[in-house]
Image 1 (tube, rainbow, N blue to C red):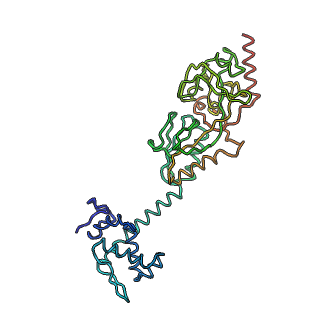
Image 2 (cartoon, one colour):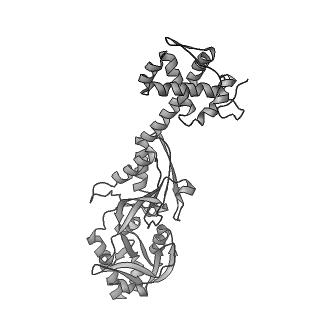
Image 3 (tube, one colour):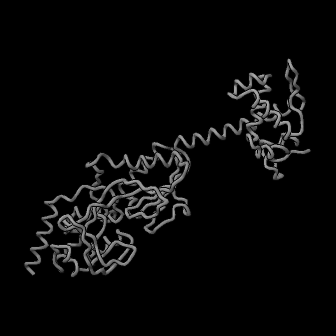
Length: 373
């Protein structure tokens, strides 16, 4: 018989093309063995051949002598040839047994090397890691995290997908999804990474034209630019420690907070957006926050991933790295103010609050303009 493949497909592999046909013919059969797989049967036979004794092989393998004998007998039955000459005093290889011993070495070594690689993959960060995140998250904090991670783990290849839409992690092949929104999929595991606040803000020119709201209910007479993928009729606030939904007049909705911030900068309306995304604009006074004492504080940046029995070391390491990169509680990463061209991609990081004195000065100036008009 000529060479054949391990699975009998007719195409010889580099590991089986030199094996005799009678060996290749029973390898697929061995895979169906009810007691052990074919590779383990061959490994047991090789141990017996090297030790020249069922008893010594059994001790080496941590098995009973009867089990070792049964495995070798099963291997002979499935191969259709006798592999060992047995007597009460000695044990020797038949010609077929010698061929199997010689030719199976490469096969066993290859299988063990592959298993070692798989175990290393599970214990050492390596391979491809696919992540998804909102568009605004790429600048600042996330860029710093990813850059540091790939320096520390050069064997990990990171693939980033940026989207503001809902995404099916399994269908899209996403390992980790970062989001600031609520996650209702019960099939996903969710980790809290860092809290962040929402902010109501508009340009000084808009506040001068329309007036500054003192209570959440005052937003009913303003043009709201809402951050949502669904129609927005109410916005969440807190009054006297209680959550309240305030009806608003939404002029424009978008699932990208960066776009809303850009419109607010141009005086188009009032933006209700994640504060860290507007941080640089707030710091330089291009946007003025209001109703801070009424803002809820239950927003988080989450890392979501699917439930799998075996997650890669790269994925586990990245999740831990994301948590650690947040810094100690109360000491979030801080980024310097960015020029306007760069601010549109400002990060959703845990930013320091706007300096009260600077913010109040802008508000005072806006109110002064109102009194003079």
